[in-house]
Length: 254
Image (cartoon, rainbow, N blue to C red; front, side, top):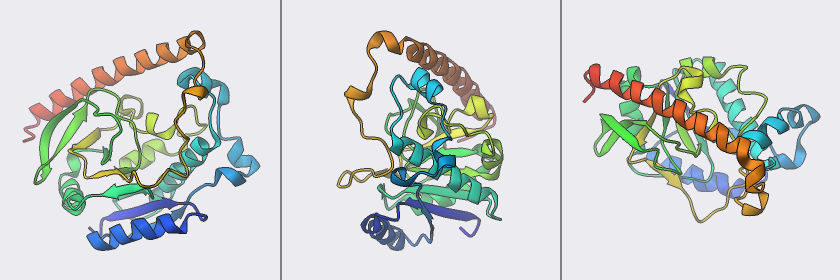
């Protein structure tokens, strides 16, 4: 596991959350680096300018929340730091993630089978309609996702992904978890481990992501461009994923 660098995104004003995830990491024997999260309460002018608000409203159907930009910039910084390191792979975690006992074995399996992926999601909000093709640890398989699978509380990337993201993630036009796994856009092998070895700690609320609220959404008629964008993205995702699934089947994945 010396080839893997781990980053935990954590706000300076949330030491109790750091203590919570530190205990989990210690229990699993996983060392990590703390990455100070970008605080939405104290944006610099340069940080506040890193969003294309018109594109965000058009694509997401609601105005951006400050926490979404803080979350996005925090992940961008994690990718940047990984790109400047000598590590081959990076595990990026948000501090409200719940780590299951199988995580170390899954990580070891992913490192061993690195030819099959560039980005791997280890947690998920939606199922992603996975098509499993390769065992990475007992009870866990690597899968191609046919549909949208949001969430970015736990994922692994390699140096090819970091290079693809470099300088191209900004400005923000969607929440981070809607962008970084668009394999067809980045020309990356984006995968999911199923069942996921990480979940969301429901006992604590997110401090960097935006709260879910129907009141933020525009009325349906203002969301027509959003529906069009999502339909196009879903179509491209499906075409890309079917091609990826066929490729893995022909490669002899098991």
